[in-house]
Image 1 (cartoon, rainbow, N blue to C red):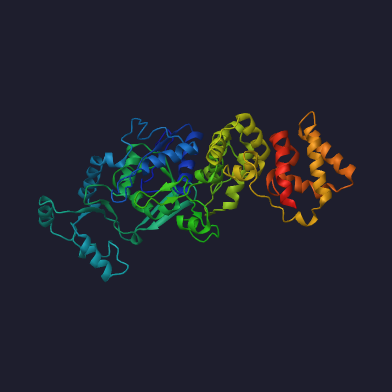
Image 2 (cartoon, one colour):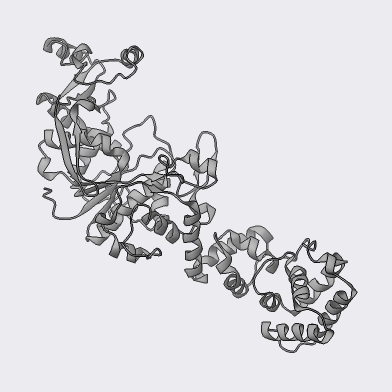
Length: 506
């Protein structure tokens, strides 16, 4: 049982590339749990693997979390009293614990070179460094103590490996999965300290969690195979009573449910798997993110929360406050959660409908300026947005749905109406344009009344004139109510568009 009094959780990503939506979900579940229990959410950067370190990745991770509203209480930028918050800056603290384990006979020095280990892998295809072969390899268990001391004194490169017990069972109680147990014979002797003096994830995560007084660990199911090593380290270092409670989150699966969702799947199926655009520093290749595709952060977070969790009701739309109130570990599923991009788009559509114009206008203004190089009155843009908002799946859809409000049509989709076009219809539009010009009040209701009265007076069919009117104003067979479009465009613009479009129907 944990002795922790205060809830302290951490998200500990490696700065090696784009942030997968599974990583953001891990951060989110940690954050929700901390907020619900009045605890602390810590961002710790796990940069012990210097070979995989990517410049800019740490800043990217922080920007992703900020976009999602997942704000750490402690981080490299906002340190508390448990720092440093980058593992590379904690390097001096790790060796003492690895050496302590060697002294206790629970770990050992391994002097095998990379070449020697490669040779073993070639000779034994399923090679793993374990209780079965450790005495045949070059380490402080197989060498005489004097030879080991001599190698250490000479500065011979070496690692420190945990000595996994033979024929043992390691078990723990997972907050999601219940009792989980492992046979130690199936686990190899993991490296704890690398030859460069940096710890591996296994040692660093245990030491850091203890030093930062982490009370609960939420992490992906893919870390389950590492759990026996971590459990033993908590025990071997004498910290068993301080061990956090563990919760291994279900995988996010491919849309067909067959295996873990990867960046490759997103590339193949045409949807993002990263929270934000990631630019490869070496190639310059851009991997598109949810933010840049036009997802609102609220929709992205809402969608993520429901990948593997629900509150037991039919509710699907949750604000951040509601998620904090309703999140519970016992409602997290053990089974993997299939990622459904159509459902993700549905969440975004719903959140765009809920969003205020004020929230969306900064993005909308940017889209209009990019497309037209012109500045329009904010009131006009807000009115256009109100008309098309319910048609948007992504904020970027705004231009497709409303470009005709800002620039006249360059072509007309007349193929469907041309066969029924005749001189009576042309005359109708010429005459209705004159009557529009004389209309005293220019609003949708009066425009509609005049238009339909004129049709009735002429003995024509409403259905055969509404579509041509729409195409004249819009260029195509889409858009909101045509009379509202006419009202917003203004009388002068509507008259000009009718005159310009008539020849395209003949």
